[in-house]
Length: 513
Image (cartoon, rainbow, N blue to C red; front, side, top):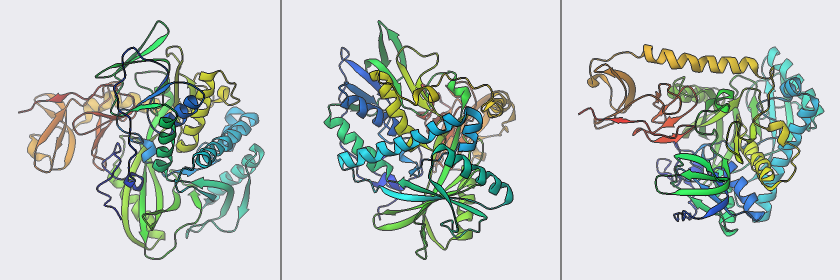
């Protein structure tokens, strides 16, 4: 087993997922000439960006992918890589908010995205540990059973194959268990590397370490400025989980983090199916073999980014695992970010209020591998002028006054709270000496609020704690050694550099010497 502390592929966290231990592909990193005009610039090299770019490149477009860090740096490298045709927004919820026809469309879109993944794997012979897996969804009390019964009925109406079962795939007592046939799992970064290989082979270009600072639209061309160049393209796609700047989607999507463990068991009681409970937040289970060693992959303990203690989330998840499994060791602990849409469905298509031919894909909830793939198909079709039966349902400018309204109010009232309360609630400290090594804190110093980190040698790094996206105050994430914004999910490293989320500018460093 490779050392989990020495990942080959970097991510936006200090924790390490098992996917990061694979060997990295050789990447193209040539600087683009300023006079080159691409058909499409895709910003972000995760599953959404690579799928979109590959489909366009194969259709004859000249595409460039600009990645701020490295391919798979964000959520694609931290997903638990479940492939489902049922989603965090359940079919009863979709039917209630959007109608029966929409529910059937969502089911069909999930099937098509799943088929897109398997077709690409087969066509390009991508060795990514793909396997078909049936999936259990189970209840543990009367309230959950009532909800699960509704899911059974609505899922069948939507066209999903699901039956009641007498087992649930895990050693946890249950009341009702549903079995969804022909779901799947894979190694996300091996799959991503397969897409990268074929994209480059088709003539596509990838530029890692290329952070887009700002964009403009002049003479019908998008101009994307980096620290070293200006990239020109006819179409621009934000495959960055959430677009930068401040726009409507930041008020319709809430950032959350989910936590995952890679657990070695004393026995061989590894689940051979995908499994989900009905708790809130729910737990999700599967297994994967890493370097010949099987692991229980257990996730959950989700919370809004920047709001709760990530270390406690890991502790709770491990305690839950030990309650039901004979744990030998927890070899991997990692987390990743996703965005919850106000009305339950992703936003895929033209960016509301954006420039012409500017596209976005966000709000995938916990179903990023499927909806990222679906986004690639919808956006590439929109750019190519191909009719897509799902585009209208998922378009970002849709208005559903009732669907998700209470969630919209709750999430944005919370954002408003953090604009004000965080400026008043920080506990003043008499000196930096009170700060323990290896920790960070937002403190007052000389009447100025600072985000301060003290490393293991006692060296201090101080930053202005005001998120450069919308002005909220960042919080320290001890588990991932990052500064996280509780409003829109912007995340910065210990030196204030943007990791993920909508900010375009780094946090300002302060000389406190």
